[in-house]
Image (tube, rainbow over all chains, first blue to last red; front, side):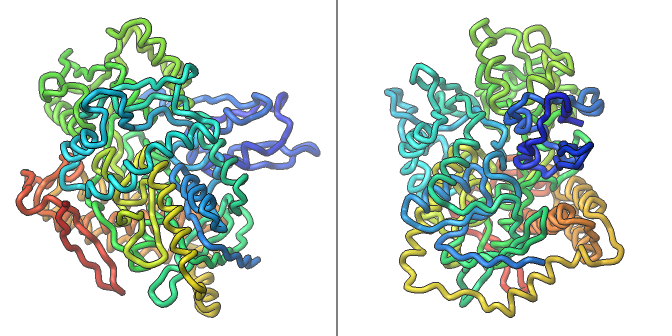
Length: 70
Length: 554
C-alpha cells in the first residue's frame, strides 16, 4: 500500500494531503504535531505525485503483494 | 452546511490537462474563470503524475508529416468514429499554439537541445509521437492558471449543471472535505472531466488499479446528458495492454522504441497477424492479443531484449515520465527489460475514444460547443480531440469559445434559488440515511454486469440481459449510505458509472455491426458495415425518454 511516510524526515507540511488526487492522504495530530497517513490505501493510483512533490523526500513507494505477484 | 455563491463568465468543470488548458484559453480571452476539480489542479487528472507522449505532425519535410497526411491517418484508423472537419478546425488549427504554450509555461515538448524526439506506433505512417518529459506538466499548468487570476476550487466535486430557459448557466457541487456547498452561476460552462473508469471488472483485482485515472468516472458526460446534451460513440469499450499487475501506461514508449509482442509459444504474433506488426493500431493489437489468449497461447509478453544500447538507455530514462512509479514497480517485481520479456495483459474496459484520434462522450462541433447553449466540452469527456494532444488543443479551443459565448450575452439569467436549494438536499441524502449500502458494494455489481454482458463479446441477448441487470441495481442507488464527504463523492461517482454503463449498453445494442473490434464487437453482427454504419451513434435524453440516432461522418 504505497506511499510510505518516513516520519523522521516529514515536517508535517501537508502538501501530500493537499495534492493527492485520490483524496487518500489525510493529516492527523500525533504528539503535538501534524502527520500524514493513508486513510484510503485501496484508492491509491500509484501516480507518484506525493513522492515527487514532497519537499523533504520523506515518501517511498512500496507496491502490495497482489500487484507484485499476480 | 455552508453555502458559497460565486459567479463568473466561465466555469470549467475538471482541472486536468484539458480543463487547465480550457481555463487558460478562457482567461487569455479576458473572461473571469472558475475551475472546479475533485482533486488539486496541480496534480489531478490522467497526467497528474506525468506524461511522456504528445501526438503531432510537424511539417519537418517527410510526406507523412503534414496535416493532410495526418487526416488520412485519422480516416484510416478511425473511419466512421469522428468528423475530420472537427479534428481539422480544433486539433489541427490549435496545434502550433499548443506546442508554443507548453514551452511558454515551462514544460516544453522538446529535448534539452531543442529537438523533438519522435517515435512511431499504433498504425501511424511516421513518427507522430513526440516523446518528452512531462513530469512537471500539471504543476506548470496549475501555476499558469492561478497566475492568470482564475479562481481555483480544489477538492470540489460538481454534481449537476444549472439550466435556465434551456441554456446551461453554471453548476453546483460540494467540497469533499468540508462539505461546503458551491453554487456557481456562470454564462458558459466547459466540461473537462475525462472518460469513465471503474466501469468494468478489473483483471488486477483492485478497481482503482486502472490505466486511466480511476477518479474520472463519467460525471461530466452524465451531467451534460441530464442537461439535454447529446453524447456520441458511447458504445466503444476501450482497452489496452498493460504490465500484468500494474495498470501503468508505458505501451506507447515500449512499442514506439521497437518492443515486440510475444506469446508463450515463443511467437511474435503481431508480426504474423498484421501488416504493420507490433506498430498496428491499438485496437488491432488488443484484438489479436485476446485471440492469442483464447487460443491458449498466453501468457503474453513484450520483448525489448533486442533493442540497441542507446534505445534501452532512452527507454530506462524515460519510462517513469508517463508513470512515475513504473520503474519502482519493475524493480520490486524483479523485471528487467534487458534480460527477459515482461508479462503483460489486456486492461480493464473503459468508456473512452475508439482510437487516439477520435473520441467518445459529449458531442461537440467545430467550436467545441455541445448541443445545449452555454455548454462546451473537451478532452476525454468530448467526442472529438481526446488523448494528450487533443486535451491540450481542444481544451484551449473550448475555453476560448466559452469566453466568446459569454461575452456575447448581454446579461446572464441565473437559475432560480428555490430550485437550487431543493437540488442541494437531494445530493446530500446518502449522508443522512441511518443505514444503507456502501458505494463499493453497488459498484462491484455494476462492474461484474458490465464485464459479463456488455464486454468485448456482445450480442443482442447479452446486452439486453445486461441492461435489465443494470436497471435492477439502479433501484439500490437510493439506498447508498455515506459516512463522510469523501464517501459521498464516491457514491456520486457510482451513480455516474451506472448511468454510463446503461448508455453504453443501449448504444451497443443500437449499432448492429462491429467497428474497431474488439472495442465494439457484436458476435451477432461481426462485420464492419461501412454502407450503413460509417458514422456516430448519437444518444440523447429528453425527460425520461432516451433515444439513439445515427449521424454519418463526412
